[in-house]
Image (cartoon, rainbow, N blue to C red; front, side, top):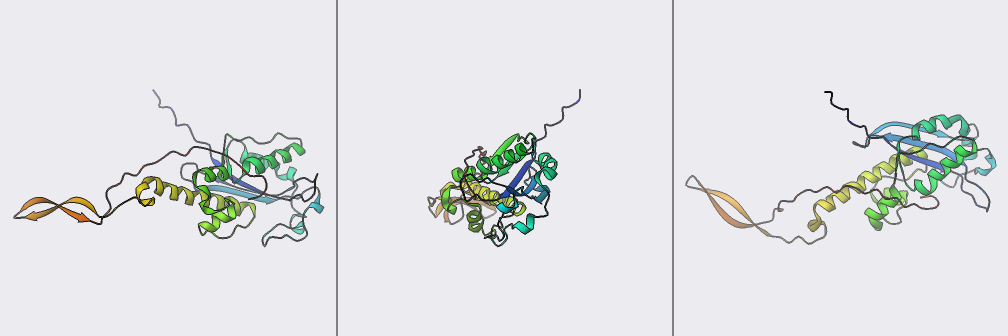
Length: 244
């Protein structure tokens, strides 16, 4: 009897959109850039990447000069492909994978759906979603500040957020890795990390006397043995409205 092949886990796609920011009532968001990295769910290593600037139908909605050092200007997107020209590629990257990103549930996912609806095509669908804004707010807390990506990156010394889609997607993954490492240490050594561990501790050691092993007690500064535990992450999403 043949053994059944293992069920493959869907890949994770971390993605990010850069858009115009409406400053008047009734104005809409226009997608200016899409960037994504495809990640192995078991090793969290990048397998592939894609990014593209996108020319909106209304170029006048794009600022002539960006307020950010690496921001997107009208000149930068003037000769970029329209959304319908890159829709097939974006659909292939997103559809049937686990979607991940910072505040994607309330912002990026909505913009993707709007963009596909505008060209009369069904939007890609995820098989799962991981919104790091909600997860980190619940699990990591506000120790890092306001939970914006730029603030989290600064907290871990990962550099300045570029506000460019591909770079921000990669930064998102690195922030998650750092947060996960901190939470793992804290859950594995709760008494140490919470300042409840008292030294010195009494341990039993061995010494030789006349060829025999004798046991004696002594005070030691060495750490007592600890059991490394692992707690399975519980998916949780809670997003923001606006840009983080």
